[in-house]
Amino acid sequence: MDADKVTELPWETQQTREIINLEGGKKKIILALAVIVAPNVILTAVLLGLILHNQVPQTYSQLPSVPDPPARESSAFLVDFSATRLLTVASWTSTLTSLLPSFAMLLVSFPVAYSIMNASKDKSTDDLPTPYQLSMLLGVLSGSIASLWNWFKYRSWEKRERVNGITKRSITWLVIVSVLGYLIVIADTWLHATTSTIQLLQALPSPSSVSAYGRGFYSSDCVSITGYTPCSVGISEKGPVYIQSTEAFKTFANVSSQNLVLSFPYEGQSYAFLTDPNVPQDTGYQASTFAVTTQCSFITHQCGVWWVDGPPDSFHCTSAFWGGLPNALYDGNFSVNPSWALAGVEFFQDPELTQNFSNGQSLANWDSFTPANPVYVGAYGIILGLTEGSPLTNLSSGDLAVLKNGLGFVMSCNMTAYDLEYVWYNGSVLVQQMVQSNISVVRTLTGPFVTELANLINLAQAAAGETTADGFRDSWTAGFSTMRAAQISTLVARVPKAPLAVLVLLSLLYAAVGILLACMALRARPSVSNNIQGRLSVAGLAAKCFEGEERSEGPTKEIQDLFGENEVGARDQEGPKVAIVASGRGGWKYDLVGQDERRNSATLTSRGNKSVEPFVRTISIS
Image (cartoon, rainbow, N blue to C red; front, side, top):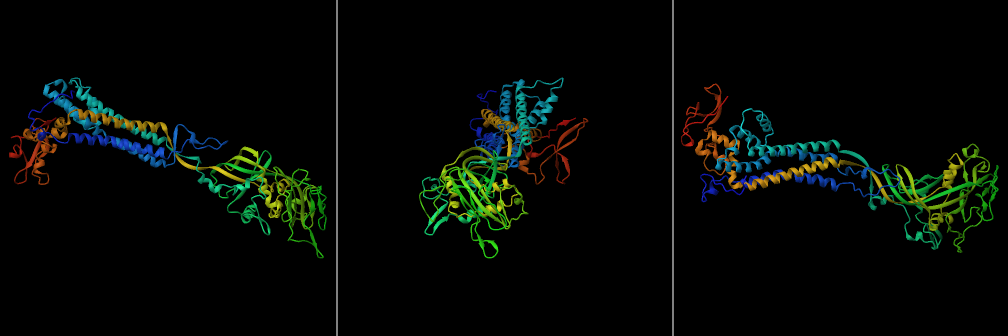
């Protein structure tokens, strides 16, 4: 079609052109374009926005030694958003697309009308449709998919006219927009079938999200090697003070609401760390912590402690480690004074327990902090209430000293503190790296015991609940930890990239087709072709058949002005009605039926000044 060719209607003049033309051609084009483009672009943008805004980032750190979670999956997006809601937005796209072919064909009708107008002026019959082709063309321009079936059957006719280029282009565009619409439905179905909700172990990068789990030193003073006292001990006028003693004792007894001591095995040894008592079961984390391991062996009898019925003797292990087990008070019967310490430790520089510590200071009769790592420990104590019938009393000779009213022990231990890099995953500790800590860590941990501010009787009593020597020794393990990253298990939507990409591309392609058709419609001089486009419809054909030439062929601004009903009105029932009646030729015909003065039905042959023809045109159908 030649868009630059200027064609005037037979009655058009320069003075009357704006008056007699149908109005709103450009408005119809803009409206149809908006209806096509807006749903596809807006819904696609909303869908992509929800996915990208709530996507689980691929850059989240992963826990070492833990199988990679599906956040690394390259074939799908993991979205922290309801899968049902995402699919609802996607389904709107396919639902609305199925309603758009009629608007797309409205845009096609403008260049078709312009071509028919030019072909009519030039009397180029090869470019004009036959009456039957016109009927099918009207179905195509209405966006009816069923009209394509009529065209398919029409091609099987043996005696039929050649289908002109105008009609072929119309059919082609209807096929394109229909196929695009069906492909969008298929892509949406594919997306629905493959999108699922999965459980993801998701890393949390924000420090605030794991601050409740963190454990460590309160002050930088704790890492000072040259400090006078460790940060766990304070000095007052009355002597040493155990800082935060209430919470510390609760933690020792594992009854704290703020801290929990957990242990883990590693290379044949037991280590311990401090964590939050309310860590959810589905939470994993990577940690940097202080890990402490303590290894002990019994030296009870080596230190000369042989108990029989009566008070315990003193112990003498080395020249630096000797003394007496809790003293006995004699008042006629043997008993133990409960005010005296029932367990204690002393710290040494060597495993033979011969070199103790001295910092050259003297304060309240204690002068031995522990500036070393590892540090060696001599531990001793008495456990009340155990008799020969208790499980621990059946241990091999040399481990414990059995007394009628209790159980005594002396142990040689070594304690080593480490800087530990580890992963807590699925209830287990996975060690990443372990190096020996700065000596300030040991000073801080042992300070309360050096000053005898921490009572070890609870540890001794807890150890007494074990039935083996290994269990007794393991109960002396302690540790502290500081967390730095965490993971939580959460439900996310898994959105495959392939169906999503297909759906997005098809939706945008549909919008692009709408823009192309709108450009073609604007090139077809809508101010002029709108006259033909309005009549290239079922309404225009009905006006030609039933309204007469004066009205159907006259100039008008609105398509409804082609009908007398627009003047008479439908509610007063004065206008004629269309009937299909038997014809005298054995077939059927359209007929106009009105009412006479007695309101009896009568076939109208003339309608006075309301009629544009002196007779009623009928169309027979057989």
